[in-house]
Image 1 (cartoon, one colour):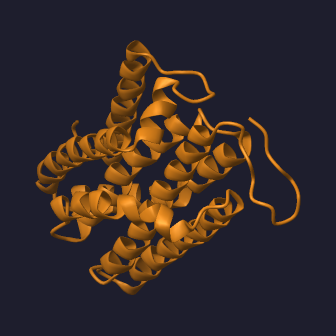
Image 2 (spheres, rainbow, N blue to C red):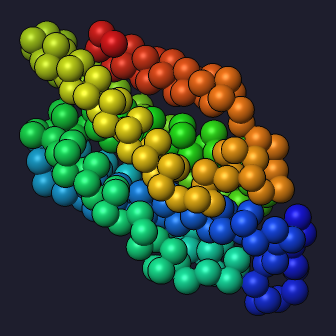
Length: 233
C-alpha cells in the first residue's frame, strides 16, 4: 500500500478495499467523537456544581478537536467526511438511545466505561491500518484527564452513599453488553471493516481465535475500569 505526499492530492492506496476500510474506520470514530461531544455537553447541565460543569465542558471541547483532526484525515484520503459518517449515524444513535443515563453518575460511568470499551475496540482495529491513520486514531482515543475526573467523582459518590455502588455496577454491566453488541454490529454491517478484520484486503488477518482473544482483552479492560471506579464487575 502506498501513499501520495503531493500537496493536496488525495492519498492513494494500492488496494481500494483497504482505502474503503480506513475511511469507514475514521468515519465511525469521527461520528463517535461528535456524539461524545454532544453527550458531555448535555451531561454538563446535570453537574452538581460549577467546577464539575466546567470540567465536562472542557472534556467536550477535546472531543470536538478530535473530530476536526479526523475530518482532515478523511479529506486527505479523498473522502467527504459527512458522507463517510452518515452510515454510522443511526447505529450509534440507537446505542445512545438504549443507554441514556438517568442521572449525573450514570452519565459519568457511561463516559468512562461505555466509551472506554468503544475506544479499545477502535484501537484494536487501528492495528491493521497505515501508520499515520493508526497514530491519529490512537492519539484521539487517549483520555487520561477525563478518566481521572470520572474515577474521582464516582468514588466520592460511593464513599458518601455506598448504596449507589450496586446500581452503578449493574449499569456498567449493561453498558458493556450494549457496547459489545454495537461494536460487533458496526463491523459486521460494513463490508470494508469486515474484510479488514478478516484479511480480505492487503493487511494481516484476524482468525477466529485471534478475534476471540481481542474480545477477551476488551472484557478484561472493562473489568479493570469497573475496579478503578470501585464497582464490582
